[in-house]
Amino acid sequence: MAETATTRERPSDAGDGRSGRIGVLLANLGTPSGTDYWSMRRYLSEFLSDPRVIDYSPLWWQPLLQLVILSRRPFTSGEAYRRIWNRERDEGPLLTITRRQTEALRARLQRHDPTILVEFAMRYGEPAIARVARHLLAQGVDRLLFMPLYPQYASPTTATACDALFRALSDIRLRFQPAVRTVPAWYDDPGYIEVLAQSIREHLARLDFEPQLLIFSYHGMPVRFVEEGDPYEHHCQTTTELVRERLGLPQARVQIAYQSRFGSEEWLQPYLDELLGGLPARGVRRVAVVSPAFVADCVETLEELAIANRELFLEAGGEHYAYIPCLNDREDHVALLERLVLRELAGWLEPHTARAAR
Image 1 (tube, rainbow, N blue to C red):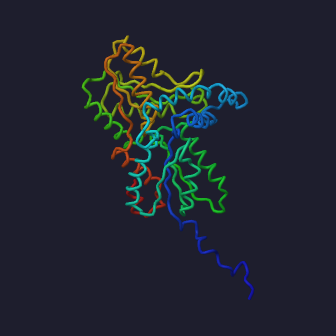
Image 2 (cartoon, rainbow, N blue to C red):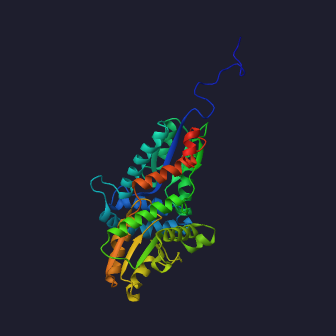
Image 3 (cartoon, rainbow, N blue to C red):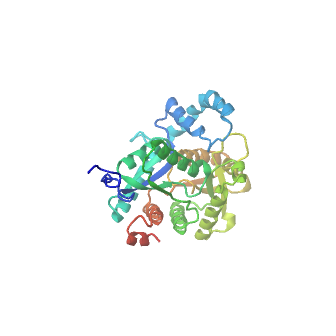
């Protein structure tokens, strides 16, 4: 009898969409491949051409970026990266730390299910989100959890990472698309607040001075973005207030600020550099700075906060300045990431594993 559509068997690997593996993909901002001019230019061009980051009309922004800004900025940015570069591995510290976080998280998650694949990618530079996504799908992943590594949501960070993932899945043109989930911001998660507070406690206890002011410095954002609906400022304020309460500090001992502004339009204030420059004249000469928006130390923390802003504060008359590192691959931080991931994997893992994430 001739084979018909009703009698033809499906391919053995077609399954029901649940026969494959679970993948967890972490994503951070990115890092240049080197500190030389052309490596820096490629990285900065990709970063500053992202409309989520700079949403000006490309008709005038791209000529300004390519012909003016990128003719000189790679030199200054390259010098900043050289001050903090991991010379042993010849890579940026963000790449080193994100790799360590991923390895530690992988070990934890594979205790729940040894078939889970855990990888990391960068929004700009390498390893690119599209390349790592293709790798996971080639390994049989049909359920993918995507985790942008930003506790506070922001469209220039969280949203653009998600954009890159979904563009990658669209470009692959799969006949069978994987199920995809994204991890929401955890800016007010009690576990995150406790881990952050504990890290601050430990580092403050090691200082040989008592800070008069604890500054929470977040990456800046144009005010216009917030006015158009981005919740980033609210998330930053909420994290700061919850950690302050957890530490038992009076409001007068804690200050929020924003760093790394770019361009001439108004950004969220107070600006960190202006704040630090004016504090000694007000009698505040001992400060500690923490940056909760970053889960891994990078050029914005290791160079801008730990070096450049220290120099600014001391030159303005400050006496003591301490930078409190990011959570990086602390055991309690990786345990937090594990709990957040397990919570979002509920229903994809065995019932007992899902219950453990609650």
